[in-house]
Image 1 (cartoon, rainbow, N blue to C red):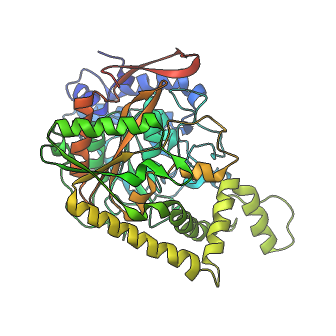
Image 2 (image 1 turned 90 degrees about the horizontal axis):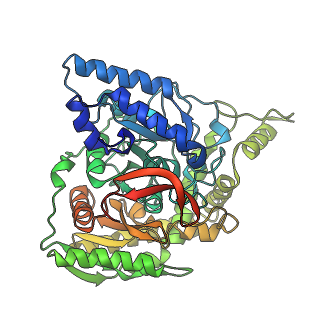
Image 3 (image 1 turned 90 degrees about the vertical axis):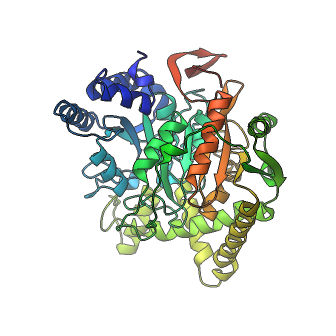
Length: 508
């Protein structure tokens, strides 16, 4: 048997069920792996070993007693540190919440507990999910396991890095403009943003409430479907979570794309200010041709309002962020300045100046300006109208196609510090992922080979509520293309780069 930390969730689940492996043994293997590489990768803000051991032992005791268990019982998971965990720190990557422990669990956390999942720790992230590289974390950046001099993406970079480095079996993140899919592409794992309203956001600390969505990051598509089965479903605590039937996503996993209609939007290969690198474009077209060879019907298409993606998103998201982050004022909870203050307004100002990082301040300023008197109609309302036009573009496209295929990112992972001083270039790294959030539709990033030792990702976008087709296409590509994220990992030098190396078990 391979080292337990290298197993996928569905592989580990089978071994746990047959008692060839205990939950405690699986956890200890993951913890040993963390001890080996966490100092290099920094995937976590806080580890929770005592909690994890208690959860693993409870699963082993329940199994020994013959109690029925969920397929994910005993599976170690990394939790993005934006999800409220009762009694455990939830920092959102910010000094503002460094010592805050919520009095309640997010709905998805509660469901994971009930399923018997094992909480390894809270994963690193860009502060309040604002960033594309995890360099905005107040607790230091995470690093890409494929090249420790490169970013893992963001804002769920810690979650993606933890999966890629085998420092957990699966992870959960949040996606506001690509924050699951972009780090998944950079780290060579699978990341899914479900339809808006498919997964409860209760207990997810809000960035932009009309865009945020929780989703899985996993080693392969099967694990993605398995975890989505647990995460998805109606929640009376979240008014935006729809009361719709949830299918068994595992049933969607079959190699079958005959007569599937696949569209390739031409706007996703070149955008003003950024061009998709040739290697990325080639990987996408190889995936498209592979589907075509298996009976899919492929043609190019157009989403004409895609040229407005960046300005639209960077009006709507900061506007909602400025409203959501107004609660952090040093009064009710969270950080409060220790400097002398003249009055309450001075206390607000100093608290927010010290507690928030530069990127969060930048977006608060942008959002506040866009919502201010005299500018609301010109900026936020206009952006909302363009968002509607984008949704119509997708609606028209899905009258002709079952899925759309695009790059996930314009480039492979970029170097640490490369874009920190140029926010616009940083924002452009999400140009391929943002539209799915604006439209509220599902999208998955799937590993699609490597260039220069770095992973590439291909994105599959589907109709609202049709995660099944998205997963079926992803599974078909994974199986036919040999792009599974299943890996055996060791710390080594690769091509002169310090990396947590992935020795592929089956290509990629």
